[in-house]
Image (cartoon, rainbow, N blue to C red):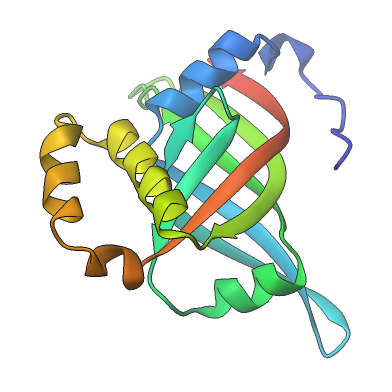
Length: 165
């Protein structure tokens, strides 16, 4: 996995795994960086997705439509880098913007079995919804939900954190 570069401002670095997990638990969106070769040249591709975080698995789950360029790229290269930012609000008149963020590296796989897809979507719903059971019941009543949705699992292999004050 990618070696992390030493942080320039070490007093801003977050190394406590409990705080890193907290940032991922509080987040709702992540931006992923993917890389692929286009006519022999390396190309970047970024996308922003809502997610569900499962700390025990050290994994993020995503749901997405059936098609798109991301699937072509991930088939070629499942290694990704991503970030989640916990915005603590810009401070007017001080040119200050406190935040906490996590940068992570990992591998993406597509879940294909109905039970795996259901579990992945359940993880997302539990992370994002205030009343997850209501949404779960609605989705379970419509089995076609899982047939027309792709579920991705990103297993985190390394991560770093940063805090801006």
